[in-house]
Amino acid sequence: MSLPKPSPDARAVVTGASSGIGEALATELAARGHSLIVVARRGELLEALAAKLTAEYGVTVEVRQSDLSNREQRQELVTELSEREISILCNNAGIATFGPLSGLDPAYERDQVELNAVAVHDLTLAVMPGMIGRGAGGILITGSAAGNMAIPNNATYAATKAFVNTFSESLRGELAGTGVNVTLLAPGPVRTETPDPAEASIVDKMVPDFLWIDSAYTAKVSLEGLEKNKMRVVPGLLSKGMSAAGQYSPRSISAPIIGSFYKKLGN
Image (tube, rainbow, N blue to C red; front, side, top):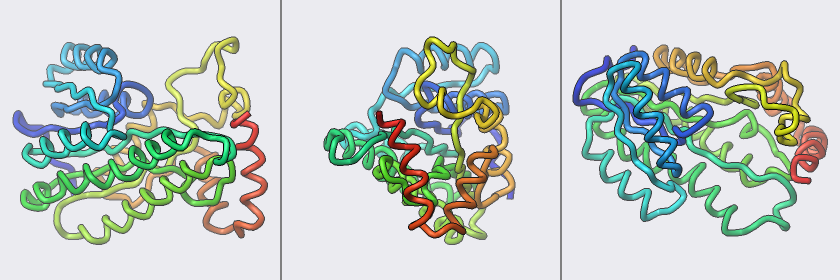
């Protein structure tokens, strides 16, 4: 089952499109000729991306500035997408926190659940009936290798990614034979470029350069996997190792080891 071909009326949707994997997915889709709806909180970055992609690839790019952790703002997008011809949905937007949950902002943790899990569910339900009716579509969900294991000091993020990992792979089974492809992207650390050492975050400093995966490469292999209707795409050595550890190592052993690393990120 291949993906729908680009058409003037259809749109590919990318959430979290203002940077990172989302920006790379939007660019890769535009290069393939798909017109887009790009979604993120930072409207000025989306406008710049839209202008760039339109100039380079001649596609239509619609900008939707929206905080998808906000239910009211999200509902506006859900309603629109349910009424549009959406050929591909890339559920990519997400946030993470590090450190003991007891010391984190409860409101932000709740927003993280809304964005990482509930928004994915809402947007998928919005586009799925139309895709099934047309007998064609693609849903790419950005989960994480972190969703395969218990991670102290990253509890909310790991839990939300466990939800989307399982949701994606379960939905793929339900939609078999409908013409709608569903693929889970489960990456480890991804970045667009190597930062200046003076501006590097603690994550950049703690994860060796050879373990980082390029966002453009991640987008490319993700869409190739979606086109082939692969269940899961796991780019990079670290993500493959985390996936294996989560599947085969007892959590009583892996959780304290991984949690100690994430505690340093929280600091």
